[in-house]
Image (cartoon, rainbow, N blue to C red; front, side, top):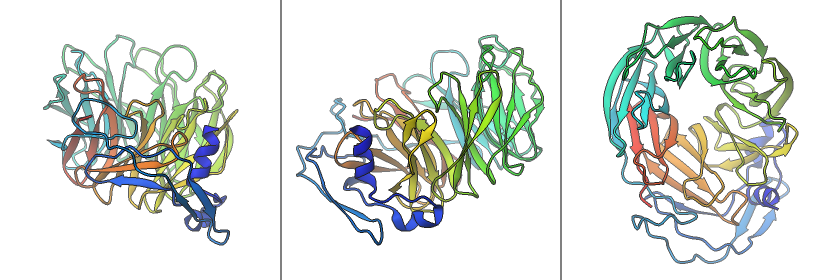
Amino acid sequence: MKARALLALLVACTPTDPAAGDGASATASTTTSSSGHVPTTSSDPPTTTATATTGATSTTTGTTGPAAVCGDGLREPGEFCFAPGVHLPTGPRPVSVVVADLDRDGDDDLLLSDFDSGALSIQTGDGSGQFVAGPAVPAFSRARDAIAGDVDGDGMPDLVFADSGLGLVGVYRHTGPGLAFGPPQPVNAGTSPRALAAADLDGDDDLDLAVVDEIGNAVLVLLGDGLGEFAEPVVYPVGIEPYDVIVADVDGDGRLDLVSADQNQARVTILLSDGTGQFVHDGQRFVNPEPRRLVAADFNLDGLLDIATASFTSDHLAILPGLGGGEFGQYIPLVLGEGLYAVIGADLDGDGPHEVVAVDHTRGELVVVGGLGVQDVLTIARFDVGAGPMDLAVSDFNGDGALDIVTADAFGAGATVLLADP
């Protein structure tokens, strides 16, 4: 029922080809806020009519119920509340951000990669939602993406970054205490590594890497030995100019698969795992034009993973509804405006399902979409962040039980921290 509700709300005639996608996007009934407060909305079923010539959908809904109150400490379904964003100065062009406890003090820290300065920057958290600038860690040339993970099995978070300038992945092994790292170790990673993900891909309990090679039109798999070294990459061809890669069990067999966003082909490519670190090409699925970042989450609580992609040039992001067994339905366009760059899934209001949370690179905003397949009305909230955001991450920075958000603002020379204010 929830999967059907998700489809009915967002689209009447979903596109099967990118050329048809722009003219077939649907308009779901929404309540929208730019101040961070979204009122509770009636769950009366909408009346939906479709126009066959355009694929457009119009909806009418019930009346608005009593408004929830931001700042009262009570999390309400559909209520998205944040205090004004706090700017954290970083390098001149931060393009990615990840949350991790880098100094092992129990508090979340931030790791940002900066494309212009060719460095990684660290912001250390104090557990109250405040951050102070930590050391800058030089990359090789052009840092695109960065992650934190224990690659050598010592229990300490190491740093791994994709450097498109030299076609390398760099590994900083944590030598401790605090934020002490050894010199970067170069790892061959194709022609132009843009994005990466880390997980145990072959079942040996060691951290492995999946790396997008943008110019090489491939995803590279680098198996780790648990001591900080990686085997030569195994190349898996995908679509044209892949931008991102995620790790997720898309077919439900208990093995971690790979999904790439092929930005110059309006598709995602699915690589299914055999459990030994080998992958099989499982075809491509149409999504929105110029997909950037990807996320896999069960947005409609039907027990199946869905995939969402942000689009930089179309007026919508795409949701691929999971059907089980690695199969997905035709993509559902969710109209939010052009300029979307990154997307994640997070339960911000504590009601169970994940909201779609994206950054709008053009408008300098965070966009939150709630109610997918659970309520009969979508709620959309927008929040100001820094200029040109390109990435985001979520965690509870101050320990109050509500999720906070940080964005990497490429044109704002910093990060923006948005603390939840339910």
